[in-house]
Image 1 (cartoon, rainbow, N blue to C red):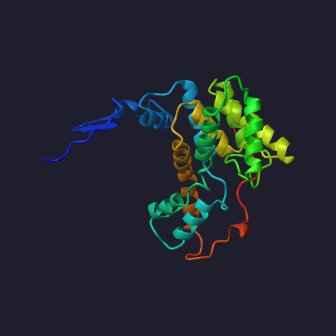
Image 2 (image 1 turned 30 degrees about the horizontal axis):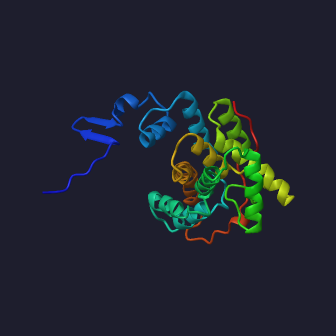
Image 3 (image 1 turned 90 degrees about the vertical axis):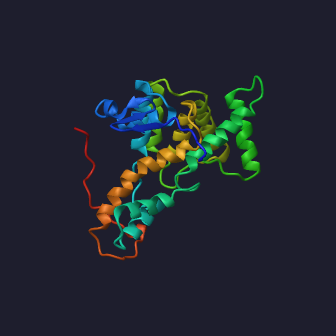
Length: 256
């Protein structure tokens, strides 16, 4: 006799697949991939606002060039002539706390701060004492600042969409206040970056912290696929130095 265990995600029977109770063939052609991701993780279909925000999150993390550790790993392995899934796996294995993990860590940091918020304490007061404390302890808050962007364009657009769709809540608000306080006390720009933004938005949407890293990985698979396919056209088994890469693609263009 084998031990039984339960799952509420997918039911498979002859000629039928149910995803969270919905026939998969009914979902095909009826919902977006973003809605499908929301459904399978959360158990229910998203609202139109939630769908739009999740879709925006997925697009925002699709790629960040050849300098990203996951892209370097994927291209290096791809240059050895392995199957595409192996190279994708190599890229995914490079995603951790310091590459692709800042969203999860920022989510947890914001949650801890808000859980320790004193009665009657404003978000501004909480931000001021939080920044003062981390500066004294020389702790870096994850999700703030960026090695390339002094003002991350992805953050600006995501925050705008989250506000428009009325998804923004206490986590997003506190993250923005914290960013200003951090920049003021440090006397240098340390804006909320895309990872921190995603972490804050997912927190306001009721997701678990670990899903921030998962959303990054789901999105980045598309970018890794593009890098791998391009790498297959290059000289095999080559040493890849990201700083030596030269962009030869399309010049800046507008959406039709």
